Image (cartoon, rainbow, N blue to C red; front, side):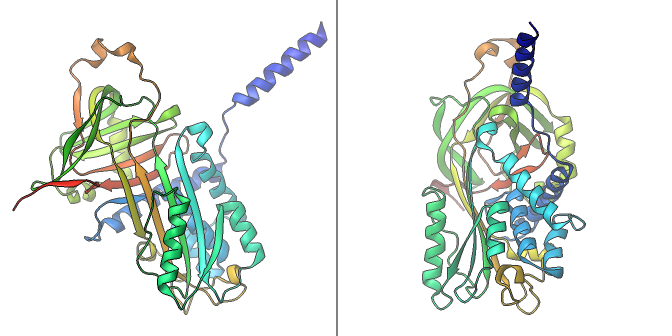
Length: 405
């Protein structure tokens, strides 16, 4: 009898361990918090550039690039990278293990049912020799591979980078840049992210509509529609709608922030902050909402060297001051750029819809969220409390319908 009971106890223990939720380390939670602060700082820096239309950055991936710099740097070159992550006092090995845990947690396709393909590469001039220890550690912590570029042939270097990005994202990204400084090191993040909704949009509920870039410029694209219960807040004081839609497994959600009417996003961006986002999230309530979203893909490429420099990364980008000797074994290298490139796709895919609430009072008199003009969006993680993506859609791909004076 006791053997049978023991067997049952072992079976229950095994089942419990299999379903146990992994608890993140305190350090990883701290780094997640730092990456969230970085999200808003980087966004605001990019938004200041009037030549930039669509914005799309993953703060946790940028954090891993800063971790890579800290790994390859010495002295203040490394400490500046850590400071931007609010991790100045964190020991190096803890920093790298914590960032590894954070990115592994939020991008796990099994537990989160997301499509998020991340490729990282460090390029260096052909004259540089990469230190074996750095190659091993950067692959282990940041899944970063390494390559060299011919400094005398910029055209070939640009072609090589763009071809790598295309291959890394299964053909979705075609251009990282048109020009490079080939005498330094470059970090490149190439990603493809596709949300899978907790409840799908019906594929038949898609039609051709117009996206109003401005009051006089309209682009033809497809819109997808569905009605359901979502966290929603109508900010009447700021004339904004805030909508949160959970992704599959409900471990993260896409938060949309949209002005009532067509207008430039500068007014919204002036009040956008981490504190303001928290305020909106606290005021959101489950609400019946008829949602219409663009069914589109965005391909966005950002050079982050200048924004990171403005946040305090001044030594790594300075030829005369940079100390990246952990990468090459000597002070012969500086950071010439950080390219952050993402293909992002909004589609109908997701879990089956819970139809039990249809025809009930729960969906009576739904609010309308019709995203046919510029908006800001974030992918917010529930477990780590971090922001996985932050961006804005100003000009989606599509044919121009109208452009009037």
